[in-house]
Image (cartoon, rainbow, N blue to C red; front, side, top):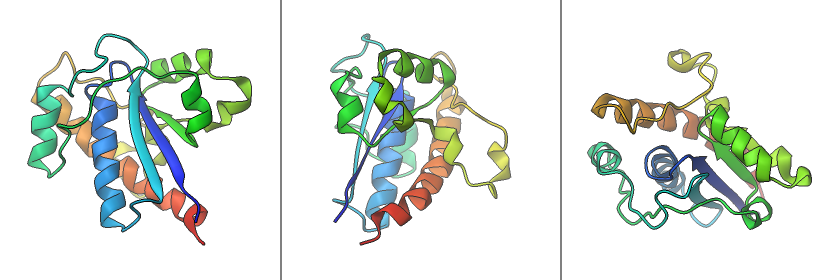
Amino acid sequence: MKTISICFVCLGNICRSPTAEGVMRHQVREAKLDGRIAIDSAGTGTWHIGDAPDERAQRAAAKRGYDLSALRGRQIAVPDFERFDLLIAMDDANLAALRQICPPEQRDKLRLLMEFVPEIDHRWAGEREVPDPYFGDAAGFEQVLDQCEAACRGLLAALHPQLAP
């Protein structure tokens, strides 16, 4: 059976990408696709290597039933481009950072998370990026969750044909 591996990427790997990882893990589990989709997250920066996700991200996620507490920040590395089928950035700046270090033959694996929001979800129509909530208030972390939930639903739907036996 085919397995698909995904890495969500933001700047520090303590807010957006671990939130996307937690949301996607939950949706994969609910879809009974554990073992079929491998999920990880990383940051383009080095500031938070080994750190747990931001407390505000963990609190917001916990209110919706997502546990981010076991996740730890790490930096994206060149071997990740071979290891993962998709590397999904939260914004254009991190997508550009990925392109700078990505081997040319792996560039087709790079995507933005918001590309996967289903067209019927008009709330996020035209949005390309998941904004960094780090310097904001709790509302920013709620928005990140809203966007990740919508985009991960679309991502899971997009992956279904590839998971067929």
